[in-house]
Image (cartoon, rainbow, N blue to C red):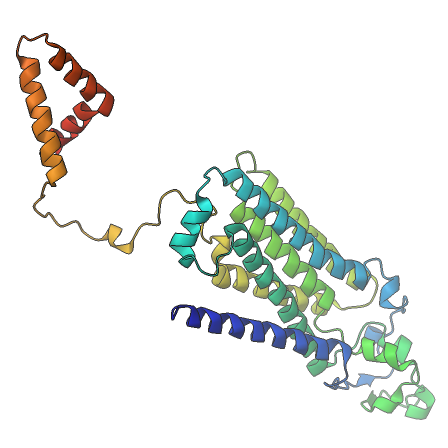
Length: 349
């Protein structure tokens, strides 16, 4: 039972990391623990005077829809794909016994379907929260202004002295609009919607490409993968078209999502090339590739006995005998395949 202690420690360590990631994302998203940097602006700056098209819920891609798709579609696709692959490969009744003996030593056993599904979905969920943390950290630190910032800020240009000369306004009290709208307008770099959408699309596209090996999918896999990436790209374009983000915000979100998805797929789940669901042959040892060393071959007592029997049989076959014993020995040799063994035996010698 001592070998279970490191596994248990690693499991608890991963759970602590996951819980910490979720809590940090929660504090960024729903609390004011981290204050947003107040970035100044110039009076009548045309970069921030775009029209305000309403709250996020009125967008063509509202946050509720985006979060549901980002969380639900990859979960459904990965679960269904792993289940189908497992059922297609489940052709041996003693699979569970082999897995228990070889993989886990008959302790803390998990079905290979459950093991792979939880692993891929767990890494995907961790990546979602990590992406959210990176994006929120960037928004809090930079405080970049949205294209419609001055529309919701509603500064009093007369009181700020903007009538006489072009001035740079840096204090927070310059705005007279709704505080919630102003706060959201200060958190645009990088774009969260662009980062989450491209992360989910790339992770799922790489999963489909690396996992599905069925015939006839040579064209279907790239079409599906490119379709997912196109949806993520359209999400970013929609953010710019509705004046909710700049192009720089969307591009930065794309970079963050692509980087996190690529890192997790390549370095954590190793291109989804985990242990096969059904492996008839045990994995080859690393000594397989080592140079072969010629050692003298020692015959086992069983091989010596069979060889002697085959030799006696050959001698009896050489005699012009048609006795019942000779015919019976020839029939026994044909049934048990001794003739094939004798052929391989003489070939090796």
